[in-house]
Length: 221
Image 1 (cartoon, rainbow, N blue to C red):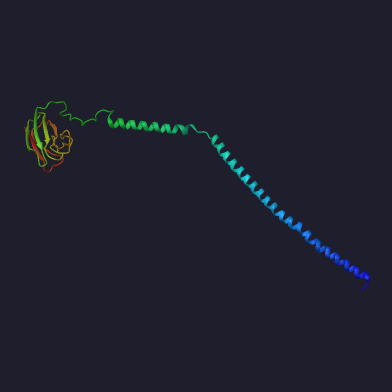
Image 2: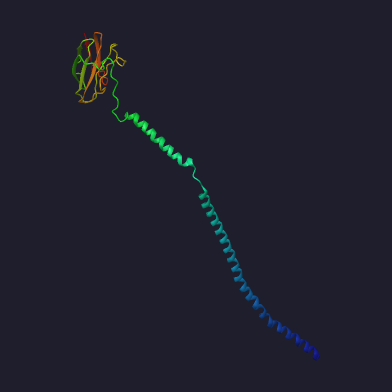
């Protein structure tokens, strides 16, 4: 081999050697750049997240502000205020009406309507008798037709009793019956029944609570 061929091979060897020596130096900046690029990408992601959070926060703030603004613009209608007042007044009026109707204006409750046949008349005769849980102490009574006769009935039993005198039709549970006051005579109390029958005859009487065992007759002459 000539001397010039050796020199060319040596030159190519040295060139390859220099290239190999330069390759690590060139790769180092690339690797360092990659390392530096990673934080850059992380910073970019964090920035986007921060922007997203800030946008969500602004939207939330706008929604809250809009809600308060709508509430502030809301007006209470007059009927919304007046309706409860009207309902309350109506309720008070109804209570007053019911109370006045049930209590009679605060006075005593009215009693039974007096029998017009004997109302206001002074009895011509008064007869006292008892009634117990068995029967009347007197089962045959007598009087004068056309007179006002008062019967005082004392309950000596343990249950409520009374004395009902059949009227001129001599039938019970008809409008001409003579009823006692009070209608139910409690144990130990005394009631009264006032009778005036113009026609002579024998008339029936009984206890309305025990009609099958407590009864008698009134003979008017």
